[in-house]
Image 1 (cartoon, rainbow, N blue to C red):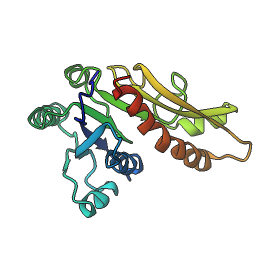
Image 2: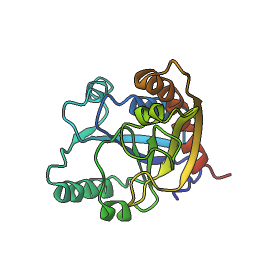
Image 3: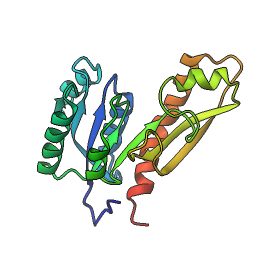
Image 4: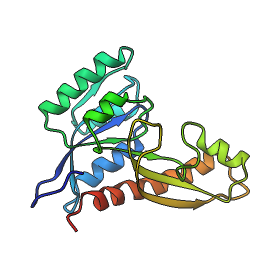
Length: 194
């Protein structure tokens, strides 16, 4: 994994598809003095992602790839990342599945945050499935991305109690709050020299 040397921060690109609340959170975190990352680019798979408004306002570089021609787009993205000497990719609500080839090229340097306690509830509609199964706990997981969906090495997890009153929306909001705390913590853990 990328190790930090001295005061150098890890050059990080964030991938989004939606409103980018985890992205905003990571960008704020990157500006803190003791943050191990610097965010120099955001890639969106959706030109209508509301996270883009935030990027424009904050004057942060972004690029849009719709992944309609996945192989071509991934090739272009890899060229951009190579040019920028990107060391880490953080997926933050990125709704496309990266090819095994892409993941291999960035081996062990792609992180994702998933709204469940992996290995339970991989994939989509996690909150709905958690509620249907009457789980007492759900939560979120930061993990390294490998070629299998939501199956990479777990860095950190946070448990959240599911209440009887929860619906998918309330559970999602509860977990999102914890995601915003967990992602920076996981990055610190992963990138610290200690």
